[in-house]
Length: 200
Image 1 (cartoon, rainbow, N blue to C red):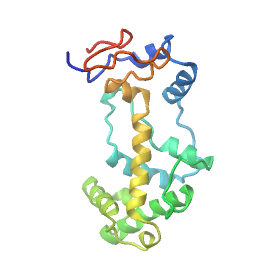
Image 2: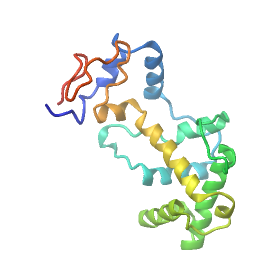
Image 3: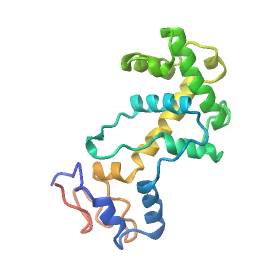
Image 4: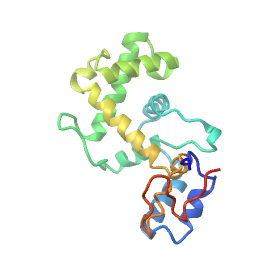
């Protein structure tokens, strides 16, 4: 039996309404499903636009799935509340300062390389610049104060966590682990719990 690559639409909502999900898991995932896109609290509109374009290059999404996960709102909310995402390199400043400097670094490098802000670059130019930041070769004085490779790593890690922890994304690749209340007993290859949906 092949493993499913996608569960039927509505799988997550069906599971969340069932007895198979603990109350706390239901609360967290329902919040992620219904999280409104609110006004910015930390980023300026220009910073948010730049960060959104970087996110679009790192975690490309298509609305053909019927949804697009907001990757910037959760980061903005975390920084607005001055919360940590649980880790940072000791050579990096606090998260709020890291993001301010990092976004400024992208603009400075864009100006140095292409003579215009990052958000006006073509997709290929953005990809090239993002690659230089990742490799630590992007020009600019900001990157002399802030490690570009560390900033890239922290940014990519946070965006990936936000994206892959979204219940609809998990539904899309066939994950039903949120059904956590009864536990998992059928853990052998190609074994399926009765509560798991069948492949389309």
